[in-house]
Amino acid sequence: HGPKIIVHVLQKFNEKLIYSIFDKEFNELCFDDMIDDNDVGILYTLCNKETGNLVKAIVDGILFSKDITPRMVLSTYSQEWPAVIALQMLVDHTLDFQNKSKEFSIDTEHLYLAMSRARGKCTVIMFPEKGNIREDYHRMKSLLNKLKDFAEVRCH
Image (cartoon, rainbow, N blue to C red):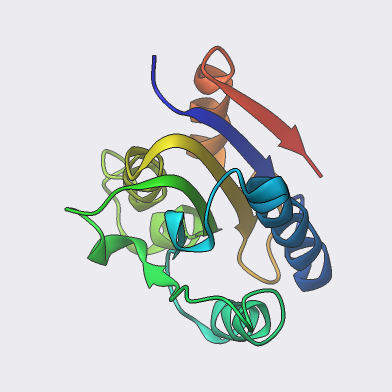
């Protein structure tokens, strides 16, 4: 048995909804002191303007009084936490136009890496780049269908 995995998949980029989901999931993890704040790994994938603003809003708001530093998922290969919340901006749709090889998926790599950092519970909040929609990411849709036996997938 691996960690309990919940994947929230947004239809489009919506900073307020992402913040709200993060707040709810973080508070559920820390409810009744079941998990200490420093036992939660906060991860994010790529840092463009939208993701950077989102991480800053979370640090300044939800994590203001906590001793937690969000980390880029690619810098966490040798780290684990009892619980992980990962913010994953989908990028494969954009890469498909630039790279003719459809064998490689950075979205899949980021998702598996984020899930493998959690020993107990992993929550992924997945969202498309601003200006795109969930249906633009065909490979991730296929992967999420395969994950339904192992993860709770919630579409927003």
